[in-house]
Image (cartoon, rainbow, N blue to C red; front, side, top):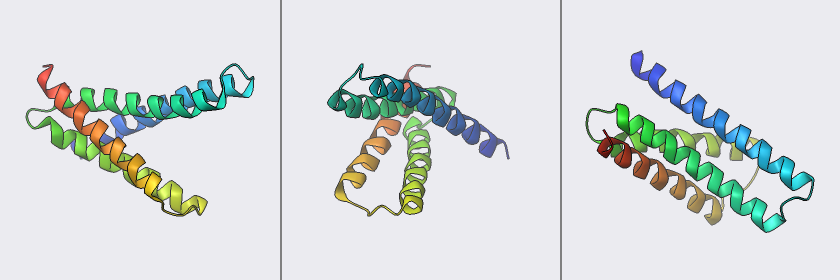
Length: 118
């Protein structure tokens, strides 16, 4: 039960920080403060940075094998993205698979950095 609590808290924190960051970026885009290209790039960067930070935090709390913590976080994030894709009726494309692999690699990297920063 403690494991579910640990991961669900970190997962909710990650989702909340991503939503707040994307809300800010979308507001800037809505008022034409940033261009479309910058908006698309910032969306990806915000997502990956938040996942990296969450991976680092989970890695710091791990006793060994930080990459496993990153894999767990990345898998949860990929499942969420997959469910959103299914609910919205979008087709699975190579671009989405690349997106998911970037999420997984970033979370693994975050877990590995976190375990080494103890």
